[in-house]
Amino acid sequence: MILVIGGTKGGSGKTMLATHLAVLRSTKGHDVLLIDADEQGSAMDFTRQRQQRMKDGPGYTAIQTREADVAVQVRQMTQKYDDIIIDVGGRDTASQRAALAVAQTLLIPFSPTSVDLWTADTVVVLLKDARPFNPGIRAFAILNKAFSRGTDNIEAAGILREYPEYWVYLADAIGNRKAFSNAFGGGYAVTEYQPKDHKAIGEITHLYRRLFDTKNT
Amino acid sequence: MPVTRKPKEETAPSEPLTEDAEFQRYLRKGGSAAHSNPEPKDVRQTLVIPGALCQEIDHLREKLLPLKKSRHQWVLEAIMERVKRDKKADVE
Image (tube, rainbow over all chains, first blue to last red; front, top):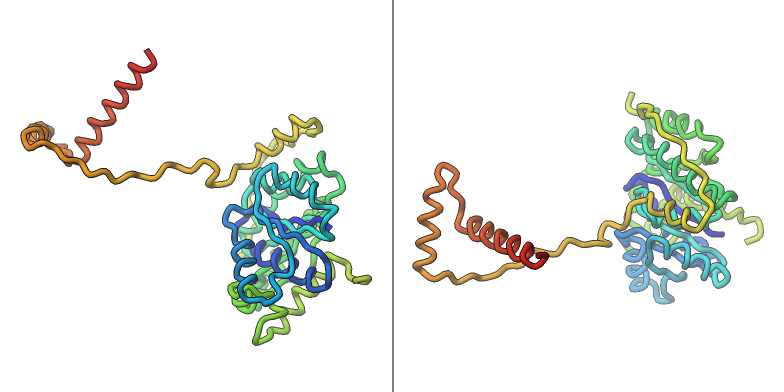
C-alpha cells in the first residue's frame, strides 16, 4: 500500500501516525519505506532516535525527500517495498501534491478543534486537484488528539461526516494521550513503550487494522 | 459552542489537469518547502574607521536632528547607496 498521512493543518499528529503505522506494519514482517516529505524532518528524527534505541534498527527504511521527487521515489520504490508510508507537512505543498498523485490511500487526521476542522475545505481542494492524476485514491478522515470528555468530538465528527464524496470518516478516534508523545520522543511506538497504555495501543492497532485490512497478515 | 464551522467562502472549481506540463502546474499550486531558497545570514564585519572620517560622520549625523541616526545605521545606508550606485554603473 502507498499511504499518505496528509492534510493542511500542522500539529494534527500526522508524523505520530505515520511513524506508528510504519512501526506496526514493519513489526508484522512487511518491508516498509517511510518517506519524510515534511521539511521539519520529524519522522527522520524519530527514526534516528529509534536507530539508537533499538538494537535491531528501526525495522523499516526511511528517506527524506520533497516536492516532485516524492512521486519519483514512490514510483521507483514501489516494487522494492511492500508498503510506502509518506509523511507530509501540514500545508498545501508541492510535496503533498506529489504524494497525492501517486498514493493509493490518504489518511487525514483532524484534532477536534475549530481551527483544524476549518482546513477540511482546503483538503477537499487538494483531493479535487489530485484526482485527475490519481482517480483511484481513497481517503479516510480520523479524529486525532480527541478529548476525553465534552461534546467536541461528536460535533467535530458531525462536520467530518459532511464530506462523503471525498473521504470515509473513521469513527474510532485516537485520543489525546500522553503515551503517544512520550513514546514518540523515545523513538518508540506505544506498543513498545513502558508503561503500557492499553487504550492508546488499542486505538492505534484498530486504525492499523482498518487501513491495512489485516485479515491475511 | 467550542467547535464551530468554518465561514463559507466562494472558490472557483479547479480544472482537470492531464498533461505532464499540467502536472507541474498542479504541483506548483502547492507551496515550496520553507527552506528551498534560504535567506543569506547576516554577516558580522568589524570596521575600522579613520578618526577624522568618523568625526565627520558624527558631525553629519548631528545635523540629522530630530531623527539622528546611529553611526551603524548611517554607515549601513552609505554602503547601500554605494552598492546601488555600483550596480547601476554595472548595468550601464
